[in-house]
Length: 497
Image 1 (cartoon, rainbow, N blue to C red):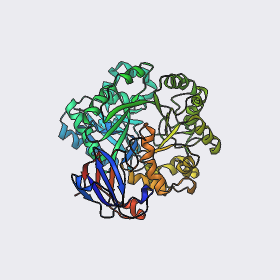
Image 2: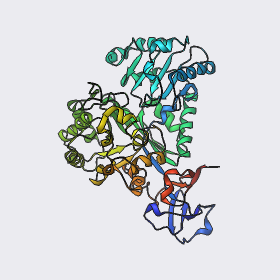
Image 3: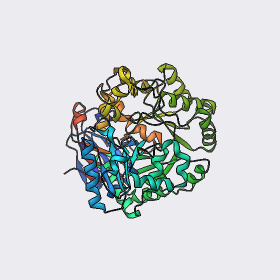
Image 4: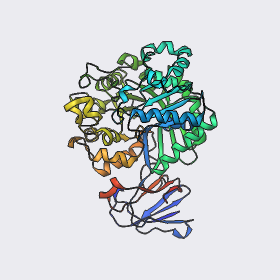
């Protein structure tokens, strides 16, 4: 394959049109003139449009759509009345007594969502088990029938503090448990994952880290990974999880990359562990893993050479994670590349925290789309934190300190161009990134975070031919661009009509 007239200015070259010659899934030559073009099977004329490495979503939940055939998406829902009407309409499609799964309700966007409860869901009169998950995945509501199914599960007794049977709200591990209890056939689950992959490809994404995976789900991922690279992080349950991880057999495009732990909740659900209470409340969130809980897991992972990815949003959780790595002696293990996921509320003083992050060797896996969605005074960050809202998501400070930075979406929503806006237009100037650096975090940074920098993330000879062709010709319009084509392993896997 030969790509001609490509603008690679965001890849460190000047704006002179370049050609990219691809053979055997690899980039073999890049330049204004390339030899061997007569052997190219097909030619794609970029016409001066921008070409960047295939985007790498370093933190996503493609498995979140495994229930797609029974799912209601509330992403554009404007009121709780509309939400309930959508649930009733879904029952007409799936039939009585079948699960109904709702996703993406966001209390910063839906009027009257504070009324959502078990009683309100029961008033629909539906006999279906109903499971409505908040956009962050850290909280959900169940109706009476779904709560009954949950109560019958033996493990639910261990999670009593996370389940409110009166109003139907559940949090954290209880949400994950309900996901396991939803009954759906393997074929239907596979359809949902394939739809999620197709959506990612249409957004220029050629690699994804799935950050919430169970062993049985990995089998589905492996089957679905035919035209995208998937890296799975298995949920850490206990020390047996190390053995589970080792038993998952990879394919060329799908492998189990490490283990995932969760140190706190989310800002939207007010369960992130913060040192100062959420604005207008006395709540400091929920710290799920103390330092002493983490230290033995970190030590074992370092000893085994297994990568950990630890979810830590609030400053108390981030402090707990950093302290655990310090006590575990992470500095003695060069290039371990363990990951800190989210890093939204950086502990103060910032300089001291960044120095400790640098010394422990942790990768900052962050989500700039959070700023795009909630990064202004009247949005969720302003509501949750008051005047200090714009100190969240300090991408620029992290990058300037030389801490490896990998961007993802957390699927809220998935889409690198949407996320780029949050990185380059962060309301706090110190937290902004230049466009080229932000793109690097969405490409080379993601590859580095899975030890893949020798194969992905750059447009240079020897690299995998993973490329994204954008609709614009100059960097100044990239935030409004669309993806015209996605190329993975030298094959066009998406092309816009």
